[in-house]
Each structure stands twice: as C-alpha cells, then as structure tokens.
Image (cartoon, rainbow, N blue to C red; front, side, top):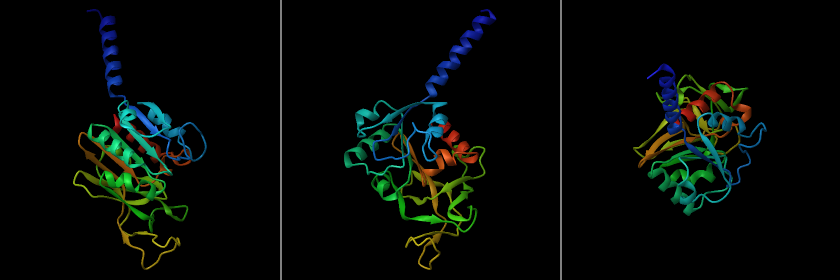
Length: 247
C-alpha cells in the first residue's frame, strides 16, 4: 500500500472516530428560559453553544420533554428554567438517564428545579450562598471556587467563578459533590444579604455529579457562570471540559 492510500485510510479512520465520539445535545428552551443559545446578549448562551458545537451537534427543544424526543439525543441540557418540569417529563428524563443518556442542569431559580433534582437524588438549598473569602468585586454572592476534586471537568483548572449559586447535596451513593465553597460560606436564609446568626455556615457543594443506571448527570449551582458575560478564562475552560466530558 503506497503512502497516499495509507494517509487516506488513516484520515478516514480519524474522521470515523471523531464522529463516533460526537454527541447529539438537546438544549431545552421550552420551560420559560429567558437566556437562550441563539442570542448574543450579555446573559445569553451563544458562546457556550459555540463551545459545545466544536464537539457536538446541538438542537433545541421548544415543547414538552418526552421519551420520544429524548430517544433522538444523547445529552439533555437545561439551563435557567423558570417553569417546573411536570411529572411526565420527570419520568421521561429519568428513563433517559437510566438508558444511558447524560443530563446537565444549570440552576437559576432553585425551587423550579427542586422536583427534577429530587428525582435524581440531589437536594438544593432554599437560600443563596454567600462567601466570606474569594469574593468578586466585593459581592459575597459572587466568588471563585477552588475546592475541586480530581475530575475531568476540572482539567487545567485551579478555580472557576460563580455568580449567585445554591447549595447542592447528593443524597445517593452514586452521586458526589465535586466542587464546593470554603468552610465559612453561609446561606442567606432571611434574604437580607447580610450576615445573620441564624444563617447556617458550612462548606457547601456547588457541583454534583453522579450516575443513574447506564447514564449520568451533572448539576451546577449557577447558570450565570456559562452566560456570555461570564464565560471567560476559567469558566470558558470549564465549558470546554464539560464538552469533552460529554464525549
């Protein structure tokens, strides 16, 4: 076999491998999401979508999440929903993960995602986290996160930035906190944005990852970290790592 034919065969093989690794990603925009992948506003997700498109095929859901819809994709991403998923949708999503699908959740309003997270064994706080260290622009709800476990999501990362997040906890042995605050972070229970003696203080989870059946999920305590305005430097690397992890 001459060199040109060998080169062609190698190129075809590499193309086949790349195609096999690429996933079909469904971005849900049917639950009141104000921040979407088609727009380039400061709080939209067009840059995040561009990062994903480097490795994957993206599609958008503008209707109910059903088993029929999910049967055509490998990954479901839901970011910044303002409307809860109903019981039929929750059942479809759980079947999807059990059968080998991947779910990625990015929270804007915690109560909206409460039922979905509960169905996969994750708890979310009713109050926003405020840090005492590593704050951004002296705003305690915005801070960098450097307590990271050894995980592919954190390749080439020492920290990432979070902009108003909720405390997460895994209630299942198959799930675990992989990124967390410092031990002195508090939950603003009365929402007065001021330290209060009744505010619980602890080291809170901000990213949880786990498995269900043949599939897996990852939950981010904040959706802003992937929005155009904040998807720079470390957060962009986190988005790239997420894209690679989905492969």
